Structure formats: structure tokens, C-alpha cells
Length: 591
Image 1 (cartoon, rainbow, N blue to C red):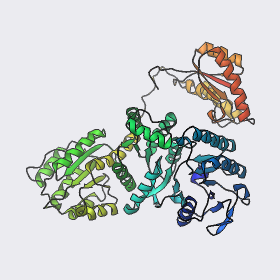
Image 2 (image 1 turned 90 degrees about the vertical axis):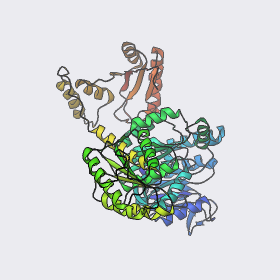
Image 3 (image 1 turned 180 degrees about the horizontal axis):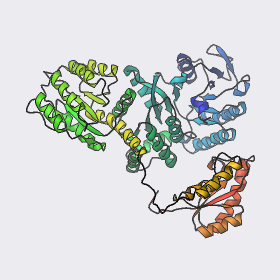
Image 4 (image 1 turned 60 degrees about the vertical axis):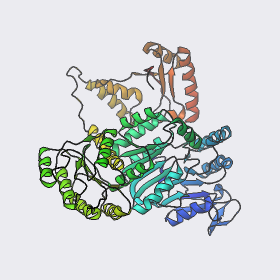
């Protein structure tokens, strides 16, 4: 069972700060839970009223009659939250959403309060989202624990945002466009559960096909990058990050208290992870619309069909910006287009069908491009002109795209004249965008996912004939683990098994005393890392079982003793076998 299941799979919850006052936080959240049909038990806490919303309310969480409570939704003043978390821990609650504001974003006093909140949560094993957040929506379980005016329709798209206001905006936008969601999460400050853990959860969620992130800053860059790389291998991921310039970074820090680093570094890291980054809300919403249709592609070669040169050039420029490929038209395709189009057509990609193009001309160009094996996807742009019938052309496009494995992205530019065409595209799950750049972005999101999948299928080169694996040595390690009734290898054993197959690894040597740790460290060279050895402890960092960058024998001795004391205090039930000593690599120009 995942620790976050208490939040995302909650079957019972308690609203702390529930209210009858119209428009209040406590009243809106209760109304949303009921309106969306949450089927689990809803308990209410209000110290001043016995009845709230027509059902009993209790002064404290600990006064609620016996029975499991998975999730607490806390909407009380910040100063009360640490004490409420303690009560939740006593009552056996394992997850919380803290909507209250007034923590690190307010300065030193708020930071101290946040540390107190974290201490209580960790003491009782409670994981929480927030503080200062809108809440979460999980459509599958009909859980709408937010104070958003708009709800979410069921779908397979997840949105994770540091801004609650963006969540409400995208929910309102999606309502008119029939875009559905599996999950909507407002992280707020992210004092406990942050982007990294939520990404890990959604990457494994069978109800989520694509993920959208709005980021203002990252608290734990290493964990975030590890999680987003893994998520992007499993599903398309699109990111919009605020704070691209120093002024925006200052605003982001004051909003969520998050760290905002160099935008160039962040941008490069996202590209390496295979994640599409968009720069504005229009593109963010367009990406949501594209991913909601479920379209996929096998490559990144894009063709553009347009009845206007300018928008075609804009789209072609953005293809380069997104590191995609402008497809080369095949000879057969050019011949087919020569036959169907006027002599003045562009004879290249973008395919300019000219301003007087009718539905038949568009249809011929679309079909010729879709039949070209050198094209992976198609963007079709239309600008309303005197001879243009946008809806008839849209009908022809829908007919041509039906049954095709190649995705078609549309950009009918304009307003009222093309509104019915956009509705037709939405009804037929054809991505519809309002600008050429947004249409290209829609393709970029699925193309990056395809590239990630292709990397997963790459076969490594065969090992050198000289690197003969030590099968007997590996077998002895595994036989010993099995004979002891264990289900996994400890770090020393796992690295020894990898070394037996001639894989390059960092040596990991066990030390059973502080003096032995010093001897090993001096033998392998400083700096070193120290990690607790225990079959009973999986997450070593959580119990103080990891020390990094240790540079002297004296530090080794001190850290060995301190680690043993800390771990024994955190996990008195665990059998500790010693400490693993490993050499650390220091790159003075790395991160």
C-alpha cells in the first residue's frame, strides 16, 4: 500500500473547520464533497456547533466515534494546525490536506509554525498536502476536497499545480470543452508531499494517461528530476514554470516559499527528461486539450498544410523551437499535390494550398500527406477567407482523419466564423488549437513521449567477450539470501551481485564498528558515504541512516556513532547489521 493512498484513495474523511456559513471555506468544501457524490463517511469537526450541514459535528477529532478515518481536511487558522495534526495522529488518521495559509510564505514566524507542523506529522506518520492549497479532486472515487467553484468531469488527464487559482481556471476552461480529469492536485507550499512523490504516484496510476504540471519552484531538485524522468517514460508530461526571470522568481518565492533556480538549467533538465515545456496559459490549456484526446505518434516528423503563408511559417519556426523535424515531402506526395493543387502551391513543407482553397483542395492535400511514410503527424491551419467555408473543410478533414494512425492537429484561426468547426473537432477527438504554435506544441507533447518510449526499446551493445560474468559468485550471493528467508539483497550484496556480472559499480564495504569504518574509509579514500545496513529498514534517509561527503577519519567515527544512536531511536524494532562505506565521486563542476 502506498503512503499516499490515504489521501488519493480515501474512503472516509473528516472536515476540520466545517461550517454552515454560506461562502465560507468549511461550507464550500462540504458542499463540493456532497455535490460530487463522495460515497465514503464524512465526519465534521466544529468546536462551537453540534450540527453542521444537517449532520452531527464534534468538538475535536478525538471525539468522533470509533471507525477508520483515512483523510483529514483542515481549514482552521494556521496556529491551530500542529495541534490538530497531533489529534489526528492519536485518532489514527494517516493523510491530511492542509488548506490553511500562514506558514513559510509569511516569514520567520510562519516557518517556525511549519516546522512544528512537520514534527507532529512525522511523529504520527501522517502525510499531508499543503499548507496553503486548494485541495484535491479524484474523479474515480468522486472525491472533491476543494473549495473550487468548478468541479471536474471524469477523464484520464492529471493536473498538479502549485497555484490553486490555476487549478480553478483550468477546471472552468475544461467545463465548456468536455475535457476530463483523473486527478487535480493543488500542492500549495508542499511542506511534506511535493511534486516528486505526486509524480511517482501518478506515473503508476492506471487511471491517468497524461500529466500537466504548473511549477513556481522546486524544493528537492534531485527527487523532482528523478520522478519526472520516470513519469515521462510512462506517460506524456507537460510543464509550465513561472519565475523565468528574476522578478517572477521573487513573486513565486513570496507566493509558495519555493526555491526558484536558473531558468536555463531548469529548461535543459526538462528537455533531457523528455518533457515538453510551454510558456503561457494558452499553450498550457492547448496541451491539456491535446492530451485529453488520447492521440499518440510514432515519430517527430511534422507536415503543415495551410491556406496562408504567414501562419505556416510561424508553425515551421516553432517546429524548430520544439526540436522536432519538418518532414521532407516524398516524390510521390509532391506528384500527388502537383496534380491536386494550383501550380503556385509551395512545393515544399509547409504545404501552402493558397488563400482560395476550397474543401476539395484541402482534402487532397491532407490525404496526400497522411499517405506519406515520411510524415508522422499533420498540422492543418485555416484562416477564414472570402472563398473559404471553414465548416465544410472541417468535415472533410474529419473524414480524412478517420481510421488514420497518424494524428492530425488543427488550427482554425479566428472567432465566431470557426466556432462550429472547433466543436466538430472536439466531438471527434481531433485536437483543436487557436494558434499555429499551440498546434505544434500539441504534437511536441506526444512526440517527446514517443521518443522516450523508443529509448526504452534500445538494445545495449553486447558485452565484451573478455567480460565473462562470475555466475558462481552471483549464485552464491543469491543462495545465501534465499537460505536466510529474505526477499531482497542489502546494498553490499546487491553491488557484489552486479560486480559479478562485470557491471561498473561503486564498491560498498560493510563496517561493524566505528574503528572498522575508519580503516575502510582510509583504504578506499575520502570523501565517503555511510549508509545504515539493516534488512528491516528500506528508506534509510527517513530514519537518519545516510551520511554524505565525509572527509576525515574523525568525521567517520563521529558519524558512525551518531547514526547508530539516531537509527536505533527512530527504529528500535530494527536489527542493525552495521554501516556500508562507499567512496563518493566529487565533480567540482557538477551539481
